[in-house]
Image 1: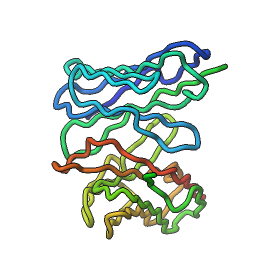
Image 2: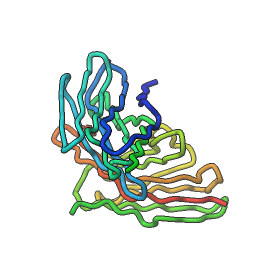
Image 3: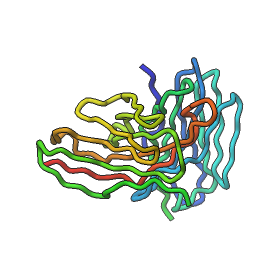
Length: 112
Length: 117
């Protein structure tokens, strides 16, 4: 059974705080790792797709790293804002032609 | 502006009814997916399709079927709706690329919240 684990399940931070989440996945037969942001009443939107060990990607205040050898990825948010409040989903793909396996998500709440 | 649309945002059906959920994408994507999302369980794959008339079972296909007669449209069918199929249903699509891979980012529709009474 292929499992994607995300932690923490939820967290609450103050505006301006920096935070990070973890995604763990099986390290064998790695193909790709995705991060999605899902805001309430909206559709999930892709943040990053990473395929190479050591990959680091950045979009504004959000960045992600990937370690395929040990099977984890971190998502960082610098200086959290209320509009960052959302559920952040991690998804893993272990070979070409197969569908993504999603974690249960980390729900972030940012207070002003 | 690329789009994945779903036929209804909210739907209420009775037990035993046949239910059709429609999904249309305008990005000429080869791959299309149906998920359901339940509290505490995350997104679970029901079926996916990598080409017209092709389909693959996901993690929880029981009680569902799908149809893909045209590239842009992927339908999810509940043959006889049951109360345990009350859920949020999300459709997604992705580009296959030259290798037919499903690693490319997925574009999601707005979801259909189905209630079966």
